Length: 144
Ligand SMILES: CC(C)(COP(=O)(O)OP(=O)(O)OC[C@H]1O[C@@H](n2cnc3c(N)ncnc32)[C@H](O)[C@@H]1OP(=O)(O)O)[C@@H](O)C(=O)NCCC(=O)NCCS
Image 1: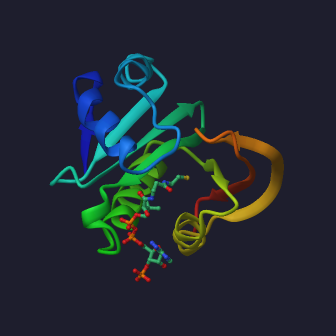
Image 2: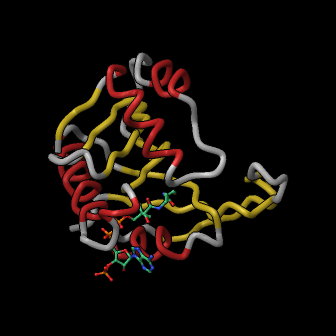
């Protein structure tokens, strides 16, 4: 895994365009990655990336995506696992995330990484067509 900074914003916005609706703009990525609590990582080939916010001993996945042509190759899961191992060594004890309840692929992946569902937020997401969807809240601690 390789740490990324705000200079990666154009690539991140491009991957988002292919992955998420609504995608975040280059400016949003640039601004986020300038915040001291936000950490970004990519894999060697820049096939996938993830952004975390880390505050004290808790982390949150802000966004995470793999380019479509590189999906189902274990890349996203490996990147997240590497990040968790890194952050656990930095004494981050617990991670949180929100995921669209219709996002079966991501929920499967998070469950494989020991995330458990603990709540939901109705109509949390709204896509570019104005359709709403429920967010599932998930968390995991350090797994022995
Ligand atoms: C979710 C996402 C990041 C997964 O990335 P990926 O690199 O393809 O994931 P991996 O190859 O590491 O998959 C690991 C496991 O997750 C599950 N999984 C991943 N994609 C899946 C799919 N399309 N359908 C069902 N299960 C899936 C599988 O269990 C998979 O293991 P397997 O291939 O051995 O069965 C990718 O699909 C993506 O970018 N989606 C759009 C953006 C997104 O939804 N981000 C998450 C927002 S919370």
